[in-house]
Each structure stands twice: as structure tokens, then as C-alpha cells.
Image (cartoon, rainbow, N blue to C red; front, side, top):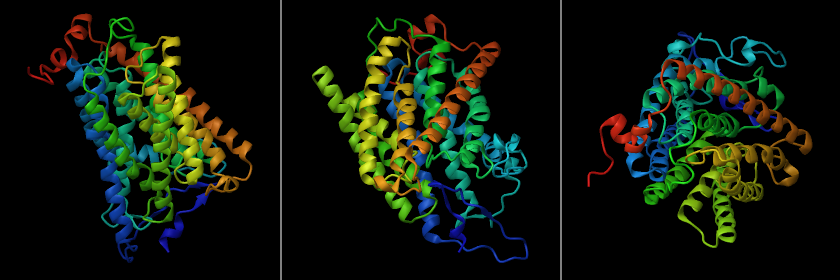
Length: 440
């Protein structure tokens, strides 16, 4: 069966080999169940960005910046959708020149041979569903990753600079990291044996580290940390967190690229890890500050979703609870105590939740993918796999830090990165878009 092309290599899901029919050949079979599930998963992942992430972030900024954050999420969705078709899919998933165990340029980035989806036909099939569905599914991952970075520089970056930076970052950071991890044998981190089922490294560590770099390059918001800057509508944030929670089932269970046992287990572990992280963050906050908060439990939810992402295809339920609890507690202290001590202004805790949660999840994936600990991977030597995971984390941090910094400096030479003090005081909604979120 075509589905047999989906293999587990060292516990890591092998992205399905393409099966294309020649004009004279019989088209490969299509499984209607797999196709229906992947269509649904794709819609769920898009739902995570618009409206999920937009509302989650929008509620946490001040009222005068609500529309700017929503608009940034929508604009990134449009920009990356087009860029993905023009060249992004080809750079991320074209396997020309890749060979297992051989390090060359193809180990780091794909070619442009499939630019504008030149190889795509209506009959193109991956596993047992149309390649067009897989392209759109992966497009939604490419969309949400730069959108996550928005939370780090919220309330102070110019819209034009944000758009240019997001496009360049997608091109020179997201696409190469996705290729190295997911494009198959011959990819740098694929050959290392890095386990990343649904994007802990590709999406969350990547975006979280980039967010911290952006926050440092742009500098602190005017008045931070002495001026109170509370979220203006935590109702929006909780609704957005709920949307992210629901949409994440498409993110994780959809990465099984089939309606099968792996998808079912990925859904289960996503739910319990997220619940455990929400409880872990709430407990840590309750003990530390004397009261649980709505913002805290929403942040804990996202931390759990992030942490289970790399392990969703290999961890069992008990491992998922351990991953979730660990992420909830660690992310709480990193987003509060560590952030205050170091003094950086990551507006909406992109680094503290996504980078830190992604690191926790990536490392613990190497532990709980082991069958001896209830996992469903093939890990027998836990310390060796944790070392492989750490190598992947370290490389991603280094690569993303350097390239993000260079891109921000280049954009800054062409376009002023930050709004001026008057615009920041007025709010980005009026200063940049001549609109208000609320007309009172």
C-alpha cells in the first residue's frame, strides 16, 4: 500500500514520499478518510493563527494597539501564503541532491526546482491524499511561525518593517530549519536523528529565539518596566487560548498525515499534556503569588501545547503528563522571574513560553519516546537521544540567533524598525493604521 511509504525512522515520522502518476499511468489511490482528516487538520491549524493567535495576543496588549496586532497576524497570513507557493514549499521540501549521510548544500536548503509549484498536478499524491492538501497543511505551519514572533515586539515595531522582516525571516530561517528537520534523509538534523514530530524545533524554538532577538534589537517599550502595561482584555486572550487549544489538534494529530493510530495517540497526548501544563503553571503561580490568574492559566495552556508538539508522535500518556507539568512550571518561572531579572522586554512572552517550552519538550522527547517509559518511539538509549535532541536545540538557537540579528539589521538599514515616541504614545492603531479598536 502507498501508506507503507510512511515509515518511522528512529521514532521520527518520515515525511511521505511523493507518488506521482505519469500521464499514461493509473493515478495512485486516494484514501477518502485520510484526505478528509488532512483537510480538517489544515483548517484547524489556520484557525490557530486567525483568529486564535490574533485574539490571544490582541487581548494582552493595550487597547490602543489591539488592531495593530490583529492586522499583523492577518498580513503575515497573506504574505506567507503567497511566498509558500512561489518558493517556500520548494525550499523547505525539495529533496534534490539529498543523500543520507552526505553533507552538502542540499542538507541545509532545498532548490527552486519546484518554484510556483511547477511539479504539482491535480493527480499528485502524498501517502494517500492529494499533494495539494499537504502543501496547504505545511503552509499553515509556515504562517503561524513568523506570526508568533509578533508577540515579542508588539506595540513598537513599524508595520512595513514587520512585513519585510517576516518575509525575509521566513525565507532565510524558517524554510532552512524546516528542510533540515523534515525534508528527509540527507537533511542535517534528520540525519542526526532529531525527533520533532510537529514542530517543537521548527516552529517554537525557532520563533521564540527570534522573538527574543527582535525584542533586544528594538529595545524596550517606552516606560517599561516602570509604567504599568496590563492586558486590556483578558477575555480575548482566554478565547484565543481556547482556539489555540482546539486548533492544536490539527497541528499535532495532523502531523501523522493519516487518520490512524498515530493521529489518535497524538490527539490524546496533546490534550493531557496541555491540561497538565495549565495546572502546573496555575499551581506555581498560586504558590508564588498567592492567587491563580486567567492570564496564567492561558499561558500555561500554550506552554503545554508547545512542549508536547515535538513528542506528540512518540510519547505515551504518562510521558505527556510529565512533559506538560515540567513545561508549565519551567515556563512560568522563565516568563516571570527570569524575565524580570534579565530585564528584557519580550512583550507577550514569546521567548518564555515558546522557546523555553519548545526546549523543554524537545529534550524530554528524547526521554519519553522510549518504550521503556511508555513511549511509542524506537529510542533504546535515552542519554544518547537526549544528546541528539540537545544538538538540534543548540544548532537551532545558534542559527536562528545569528540570522535573525543580521536580518533585523539589514531591514533597519532599509526601513526604520521602530515607531517614534509620539507614535508609540498615541498607539499603533491610530499612528500606523488610522483606526481604533474601540470607538468610545
